[in-house]
Amino acid sequence: MSGKLDGKIAVVTGGSTGIGLAIAKEFVAQGAYVFITGRRAAELDRAAKEIGRNVTAVQGDVAKLEDLDKLYDAVTKEKGRVDVLVANAGVGEFKPTAEATPEHFDKIFNVNVRGLFFTVQKAVKLLSDGATIVLVASNAQFMGIPGFAAYSATKAAVRTLARSWAAEFKDRGIRVNTLSPGPIDTPIFDTISPDKKMVEAAKAQFVAQVPLGRIGQPEEMGKAALFLASSDSSFSTGIDLVADGGMSQI
Image 1 (cartoon, one colour):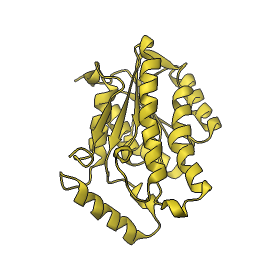
Image 2: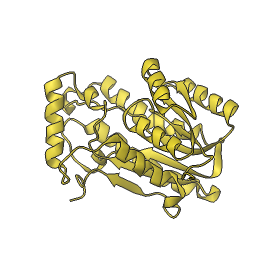
Image 3: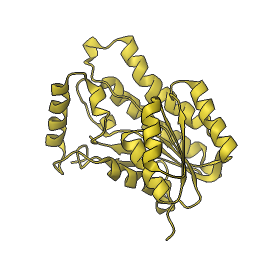
Image 4: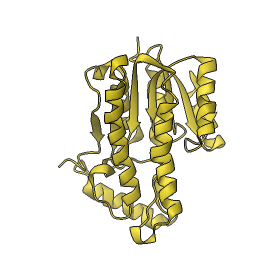
């Protein structure tokens, strides 16, 4: 039985855990060969073993341009092209504006905006005509969430980049769309705060805000990303697919 990404070469940044890992697994299951990146070697190795086949892991931080060069050097040597690019790597951190430091602001923007921008820019020469790009944003771009001002702003920037790139790359048939998850049960929750009680309270608060009454699962985001990456969405570019249980929509 053929898959929806048979023969495709995909790159998934932030592919060692959570949404990125779920996307990589789904893509491989659908016939793609996937390159995954992550900052932590141990997690990246575990992810590659979990995926099991048709995967190359390249350690790196998207905020470091030399690491992006290393990633695309590996892709060039092994496969020579990119058919699907998923810019998923991101960080979140709870910080009330009054307490936010320049270091906090720079950390969030360096990964979520600068890193994503150059993830795409450095892939342009490798992208095949008709390739697809999926930028992982967040429903936070639509909502005023106390303590997440910088994070929400980065995700609004990601949405704008998708529109710009959809227009810029259209002559090559390259489609660019965003996926905006809501609260998803991934390890990123643990990065919000070192206070475990605060993390659990945040989860409970999110559940209360989601019309479907639960937090989403990474596998659901894998399916959503597959739709945007495959020919199932062949007449969609510049769109935002919101997958948040209705949290920002109702």
